[in-house]
Amino acid sequence: MKYKCVIVDDEELARELIETHLSQLDEFELVASCESALEATKVLASNSIDLLFLDIEMPVLKGTDFLKSLSNMPKVIFTTAYRDYAIEGFELNAVDYLLKPIVFERFFKAIQKFLESVQLKTEEAEKDEASLSTDFVFVQANRKNIKIQFDDVLYIESLKDYIKIYLKEDSVMTKYSITAFNELLDHRFLRVHRSFIVNKDAISAFTKHDIEIGKIEIPIGNNYKQQVMESLISS
Image 1 (tube, one colour):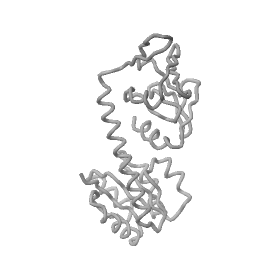
Image 2: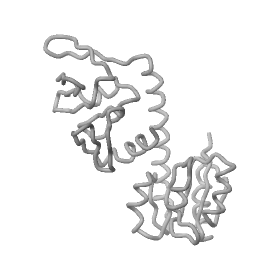
Image 3: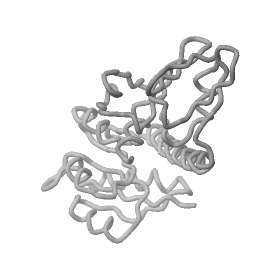
Image 4: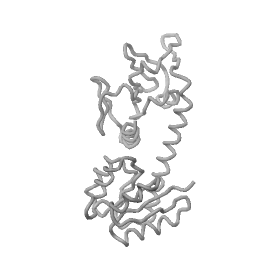
């Protein structure tokens, strides 16, 4: 499989450098190299694109504004000479943020992040498909096997060797690692922190820092932010 790419940058030398880097990677196909966001709009309208290399500071239409205007947003790696846009780029769920001039080693690291994000999405889809036939799990607590209906779960918290499962009307403590328990859950559940899993159906609000379930605020771990934002925004 080849991943289709588009480069958008008003600097010809910058476009040529990315083209050179891409030419060394067999699994990527360059569909177009555009000097403006307006030109790229026409390309994206007629092609299914997997990855966009996007400059930010461009005449007429900035890269960030262009990205916000897209209804079907591809994965994006920002390429810019300005550090000031890093936060905005992160909030737009960019795969990576490359500062010019872009050396191949740093470019390749960004490509690896893209491939990992694609693999993660594939694994999540496979997990969702496999979990459609089950909507409960049994756990041991108080010398009994207790049936936990996924619909009743609000969130799960890790407490050393145990997890606490918070339900709509109750809670259950059982000896389980949160990583192992996460494998038993279906598409409704999302790992948001090393110590927390949440039921997406129970979320009442979220920011890039935390998730609210009723009056409870659950932190989003730094290592989970991109995955969490992608999952919640696409839900």
